[in-house]
Length: 222
Ligand code: SAH
Ligand code: DHB
Ligand code: MG
Image 1 (cartoon, rainbow, N blue to C red):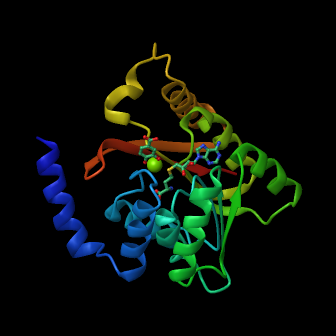
Image 2 (image 1 turned 120 degrees about the vertical axis):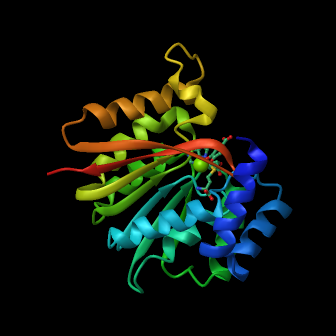
């Protein structure tokens, strides 16, 4: 099996089941034009996030790691008219591109991009005592994944869904001796999901246009 084959299958699935529209196409175009890295979720992964948010009946979504707002658009489209999505982004440049993309998609009323290191934004957010989030999508600096899972636990309710992106990284996740902070962070996050009494979860490997990677999913228990 090769990257070429994974890409061909992804194009087939995406054209059929998760076709781009003007807002999604423009979001990627403007992200590229601004020099953002091409590390958004794939279209069929975006559709998966949207379906999970719908299955969850999500009214409030928290995203950690916005980039140009591509995954944000998929997630926010799952929300009802009075829903809310808060997305956290370190880079002011990325955040500005994302705001433009969300406005073009007609989602600026229900989405909010907060700029700064996510750990600071999460501390500030918690002080506001927000209503619990129904879904948290963790997709920022992987070294902080354990902290993000702990924060997600504080900001959710029993029944909420926590999703962690990029938990495979071409298989590097199995390297217990890895000194890479991103691998260590992801392994620690998975161990929290495994051991925490208030979480039950699993992880899946994915292949496709974005290579060989995967997601972890965890449900918050009573
Ligand atoms: N969710 C996006 C992709 C996010 S890429 C999508 O699928 O479309 C990861 C993003 O996390 C980048 O924009 C990066 O700037 C941001 N990031 C990195 N470290 C961060 C931090 N400490 N706090 C908040 N965002 C961070
Ligand atoms: C990277 C980050 C991501 O969130 C992703 O989905 C793919 C790659 C990265 O930092 O390389
Ligand atoms: Mg990612």
